[in-house]
Image (tube, rainbow over all chains, first blue to last red; front, side, top):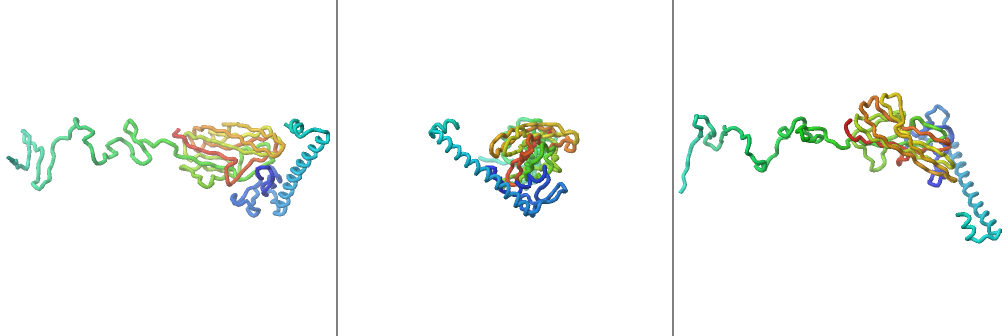
Length: 94
Length: 229
């Protein structure tokens, strides 16, 4: 995942599939699906599952971020509607 | 005025030859070697044989001690760094972190001397000696994980492991938060078959991910041999 916490690799999905160190890479310098290896004897997710899983995580992240921005704007608007100035809004947030 | 004394043999009063000549410029000195009275400054060329300076074996990896003995050169002779290549999550502990270890190979990296070896998360030393061990574990979670530990575990009987370090960090964020815990230990490795280490972790929230990377070190261990045991 990137520094902001947004998932950007199928490894970010794989850690959510099963517990602990159940997988690795035959070439850790080239973490592509074809190099995915399973240690625990369990099933290997399909490439499609990995891609879909990553996309789902990204959607959740993006939706949360978007909601946060919307809530922020909405909250500010409501405070202003109550008659607070920008400085007063800033002060109560600090 | 000049004069010349021409002889082929100079003897002492008892008839013993002190210096002789073959008449062609080759001289034989039969005088006893001097035992005193030679200034060090008189030795102004050539190289004194190492065997004349001390006992033992003189080489590029030895030095001459004050007691005139050649001994193994001091200083650091071994160092290597290992790292976790792959993330894992969903556990409240890993005792040890058992797989996905690799010797660092980041551009510019260099091991010194012999490397540590690793098998199923157990690290074996290439030689006895005092070893400095440093470890770090990087964690992240979107939420709260109040304790996340970095524990170097050591054994002196290749069986029972005890905490050599147990260092913690905490994450409590509204978004994704990162934190690392690290610790170090000086291990007197007197036997490489019995003295080993591993890296463990304990995590309060099993939604926390332990970070691995094959590009740079996020979770890993550094081993530096300080000297002889």
